[in-house]
Length: 374
Image 1 (cartoon, one colour):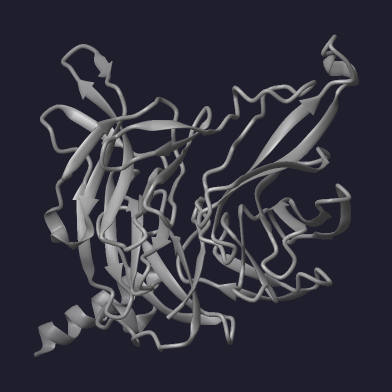
Image 2 (cartoon, rainbow, N blue to C red):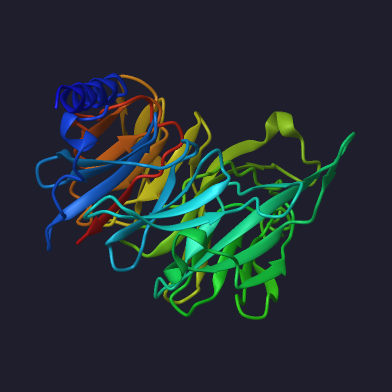
């Protein structure tokens, strides 16, 4: 009896030291409630948090298996299971948010001598029955490494804790973020945006980027690792580019611009649009669900732009840098995450700060927050 009590206390103390709530050492916390709006976020040492957006408070914390990194998360279409790329970019997991149990696991390094990683590159089919990931395999030889061609691997999400690919196809190099469209096709970001048939492996350029043909524009630069699931149901990311004065393409006199590209996942239609002068860097940017003509960007400041007018409307100073921006479904609140272990809440109209949600544990690193309604 004494040993049991001591062991329980030791577990609780260890949990507190890691930033884990005391109750989570023994229980999975409360199940999610139908009709409630939530947000998920991940952080060190290896936590998956669920936030209640009605109260802007921590609802529960699930402990994840193995190791952290990058903690990129996406919600299944039924809004019951969170899927994550984790364990140093080497494994994919599905976690039931009601009981915190791991219901899906795919180890990417399976073949002898082959080390495999996925660079933020996974997506779920519209019905949630399949998971797609582009993997980067390296054969570890005795005295050298062999970098092998990337491949798309397709898993069935119902295959449990030892899932193996059911299909595999060659992929272009340098691809990363992916989103599945409502018709089942897969959009993949890389040097260009590709549209892929996940049953045949055939793909085509859907939106040219490095190879775009915009007169007097340089090739765009894209640094974007956050696969937002938005209320607008689009696949979007930011780009920067130089707009030249003439055919001389003099960088000294060029106009440097910020823009966004967006693919409507319902219709497949794409938009490539400048929205502001490049005066500072933003890691993520999203259009408002309430007014899609407004673009919000964040890194060292929170900024709001009028897309049509291509001008800054308002900006707010931050307590520290944030990497990831997200809106609630109605667009009445926006949330800033990444870097430390707090999520800042802002009013998107006034850009006034409404509060902070402190997360147990350490920093969030490159987490992707996702908002959903059960």
